[in-house]
Image 1 (cartoon, helix red, strand yellow):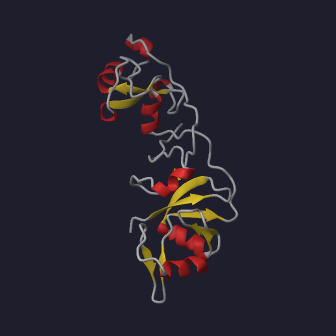
Image 2 (cartoon, rainbow, N blue to C red; image 1 turned 120 degrees about the vertical axis):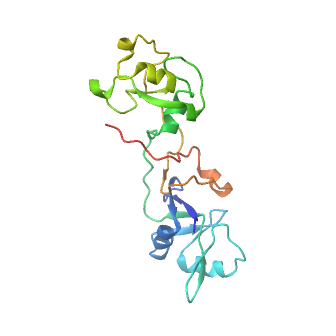
Image 3 (cartoon, rainbow, N blue to C red; image 1 turned 45 degrees about the horizontal axis):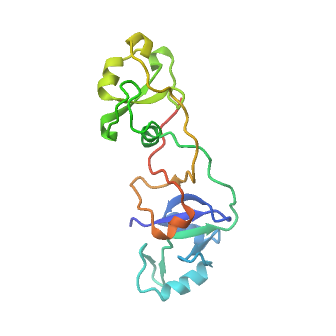
Length: 201
């Protein structure tokens, strides 16, 4: 089952997308309320009763010998009121978007599959993996620069490494596959980051 549910905190701010197993546990234990498309909240018992009236549910149903309960597309945590971390996640997608899919060395724009990320100061020179030392580069320039600094390689830079500013809700995604943003989620989502975060030094 590929059902996924948007998790909101107590203040209706998106904090993550989670699997149906986790969602149903939170709902059953009373740690969350199911939300319909109008953001009306239901506890487990009320949601189970409402599920009996549903002919269909986009997220599917969980079946047991005694009941059939709909997997909600959104839940609201009853106690958690913190906000998601307000920082841009360090992912390949975000690196490329930050630099507008342009190579730092030739300045040309490329498709994502034609780009790599480059350590401005190579790791062999003590360079770290993080926003302050990573830029987008095309494969040709990356190969030409090799394991050298731009100065050593005689290459000018069109921009210097920098950390992008945070915009919107940097929600954490608990699934490994791309998830379609549902129409019912749009009111609470500004920006969603779907890719695995890269490890920084």
